[in-house]
Length: 96
Length: 182
Image 1 (cartoon, rainbow over the protein chains, first blue to last red):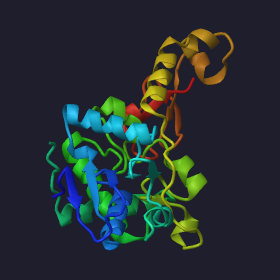
Image 2 (cartoon, each protein chain N blue to C red):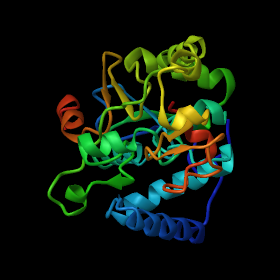
Image 3 (cartoon, chains in turn brown, blue):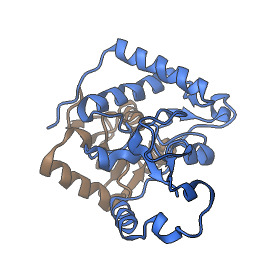
Image 4 (cartoon, rainbow over the protein chains, first blue to last red):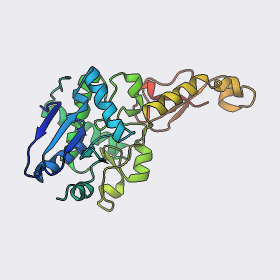
């Protein structure tokens, strides 16, 4: 059972990585697997497991990075976002 | 937090088998990556349990059916995405080329309009003149009888009858997936 929010600790903690995801989305699952297998430290939020004000606030955060509010949205160093499962872009930005 | 319902392996297997059979019968293909596809089928079952309908597993559902009609699987965007990318947004359904390994599968951009765009479109539809009022004198054929034509937004099926069917006879989409066509 997925927790709505959490943190994965890996060897690579050079970047601040935040994954906005859905617990039912397989592209989100692939993104998380890539990060875990590459031993990247990251925080994650499953929006479909949040309710009420907490969910609305998280939706607003996602829209700031990605107006389509689609998932996964991966925010790196609070500076840029990778939308969708894009393994090459993720590896490049995180220098993996 | 919202509890995520658990579904059994038997439920996943049963729905996977059903969707696979229906897809083949209608010249669609489920994604041949069975683990991937069963993950999406699990998502459909989770969403059925928490919302009451098959909201797209890869989109954030509102939880109110009326707001989510366009993303009930198969969604309104499946066919255009199959045409453009060889897969629906989730990649539950794929083209023949993807199925046969001739085209690579990738995560595709979201085609669904934003909340604001959907709200604006709905408001425009309400304020637009009704088709029969605007074209009463022009149309011949179906509408001459006064019978409206309904279009299934999932598969494009058209029928002339006072109300849409309870289920689309072609793709089995529910009545509320139909729009007035003329």
